Length: 326
Image 1 (tube, rainbow, N blue to C red):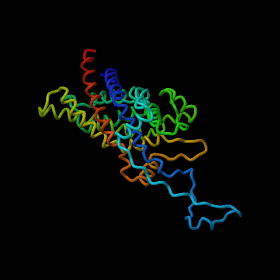
Image 2 (cartoon, rainbow, N blue to C red; image 1 turned 90 degrees about the vertical axis):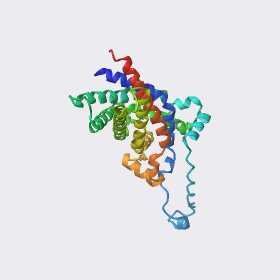
Image 3 (cartoon, rainbow, N blue to C red; image 1 turned 30 degrees about the vertical axis):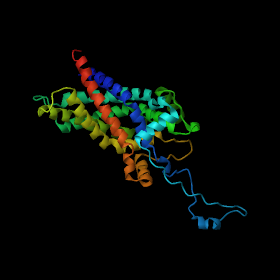
Image 4 (cartoon, rainbow, N blue to C red; image 1 turned 60 degrees about the horizontal axis):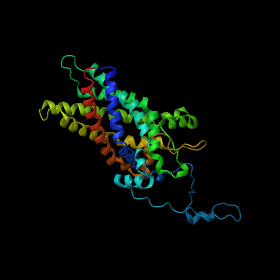
């Protein structure tokens, strides 16, 4: 297999990533909904109740007016509403914001994880039967996903920021021209370490996604063929792909929400960052928005993960046929 596995996985991943990019963008926008309700550590609000505000120690002639109550949280828009709003306010091209980062991410992350997974499958398969147990498939997915995520994290950060940019006021937008422009500016403005911001989350998510997605696809496909439910063709590939996409969505969504928020946060020099890490982000999100906030964007996640996984594996099977003699 060797290099061939990387090439096959890379081609399939780029095709799948580009074709489902708008759904991924909608997912990111939904995951950031309600984030403004998270307390800002840089904004200090007086702890006294309004009734006592005038009795606090103050310079003569100084009038202290209590801060107005926070506005009620806005209703959360669904994926269709989010997509329509993006189309109306930013134009149809906005649905492909950050697509260059998606191509770069798939080239780095998915090519690595798909190629390594195939190598591990070959090395860890039973020499007599040629089969691989579910436990070893999961282990192969965990290791391959973790390594792939570490390699592709800079492109992941660029992609999240480019996808989220349109929701910011015009004056606050980053306006990255491409994935390479994003990576270059982040390195200069925020330091080289900013390219691996949220990398622990990226690695954790990738390990979960790769293990659940690739292992469940192989497992479901093998079960269908062994029981004779369908032949090894498009129907089997699509069925196994949808099952894999559902498993991966359920397993990875909470980590994906936290990853998106940590990567997207703005860190100004001399100010306290909104989140001090993954755990802090998770706790603040749950306190401000409730536990189910960790499943924000689940509908577009599964709506994207399903088609992505189908396109990924169907394309992969076709590419394998084309390259079988090489």
